[in-house]
Length: 272
Image 1 (cartoon, rainbow, N blue to C red):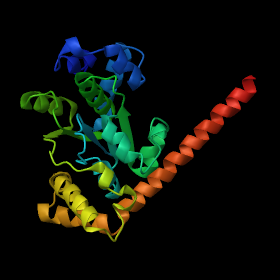
Image 2: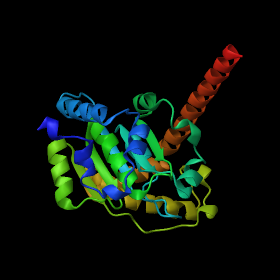
Image 3: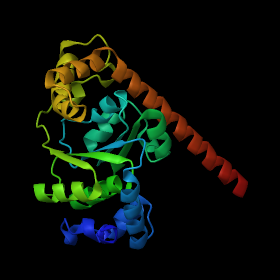
Image 4: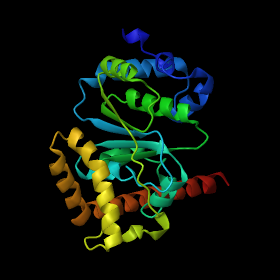
C-alpha cells in the first residue's frame, strides 16, 4: 500500500490540466517526484510514532474585506495547539497581518517558528492558481509526519468520498468548512487596538464576529460545547492573551528578519 501513495496519487484527485507540478515541488523544497514519494511514504510510516501533533489549517480562499479565520491560527496557538496555517497571499492577508508582524520573515525559520511560537504561517504567492494552491497545501500537510488534523476552509476541490479516502489512507482527520460571508470595512478598524482589553463598540462587534466564526471550529477541534468555545475565545479577546501572542510573534519575525539580513550582509562583505 505504501508504494501506491505518491505525488501522482494526490494529483489524480484534481484537474491535472491546471497544475504545474514543478512549481509545487520547488516551493516544497523537493527536487524530484521520487524524492516526494519517498518522503510521503516515510511520513505515513512514522505518523503513529510522533510524540507531538501538528494541526494544519488550509484556507483555500479569502474574501476581500472579510476577517474570517485570519486569526484562527493565533487562537489555536494560544491554546497550545501547534498550528500551520496555509493561505493565498491576497490583499486582505497582507493588509491585516502587516499591522502585527513582518511578512517578509515568514519564509524564514519555519521549524523554529512552530517550536517557539506553536505557529507557522505559509502565505502562498498569487502565481499559484486555485488548484495548484490546494495541491500544494494538501501535499505539505501530508508530508509532515506530525500532521494529525487538516481543516480546509473554503472549497477543497475534493468531494466527501475523496476526503474520506485521503483521511483513511494517510491516517489524518480531514474537515472541510464553508467560508463565512461576513464582511467589514478594513479601513475603519484600528487593528493595533483590536485585541486590547478595553474596546470601542465598533471593535467589540468585530471581535464578536471573529468569535462567532471561530467558535464552531474550536468546539470541534477541542471537543467542547459550542457555548464553552464561545466563552473561551471571548476570554482570549479581552484578557489580551491574543494581543500578547500577536505582539510576541511580531517580535519573533523582526528578530529572524534582522538576523537573516545581517547574515546576508556578512556573506556579501566576505565575497567582496
